[in-house]
Length: 231
Image 1 (cartoon, rainbow, N blue to C red):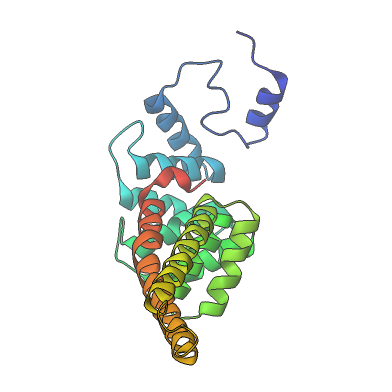
Image 2 (cartoon, one colour; image 1 turned 135 degrees about the horizontal axis):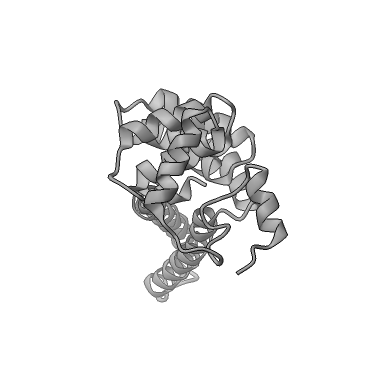
């Protein structure tokens, strides 16, 4: 089939991605890896980046985190946001080399400042956990807001789940308080109100701990290891 001119122009401009011509040619990851390697040896940044991802994901050949880390490092030095975010992931998880949360936080910050939603999300989680630097919940909240504005899937999912969980907690607390204070409500009004506030605080605190350490952590772990999400 004839290739569309827009796809050809994209390829020639150096902005081609592995899926650009999927509809026109049969995918051959091994050949793509070989060709990327040839271009990468000549210093082509896009080739170095995509070759790094292929090494990271084991596409077209064996997985090689060390080589992926080296290649992504070359591109990250040139200010490539996606490469900076991927390299940060590898430093944070200790893939292809020693674990370095300080460097991971620095790289996430560079990518986040360029508006990369995934980096904003991961940097926010590092601020929440105090990894690679001091804990900063205010900055984490700001970064999550930025990521949400860009439609980052994990942040949107967290927001939806948080809303649902908060509604459930509020309803549960109200029902429990109503049952507990149903008898002699007027006589023990002050006591019941005090108990309501105490229970509400405890319930929200319990939810916050479970939610942050459970659901949010699960989302983070999924984001960390899937190299394809470093695009």
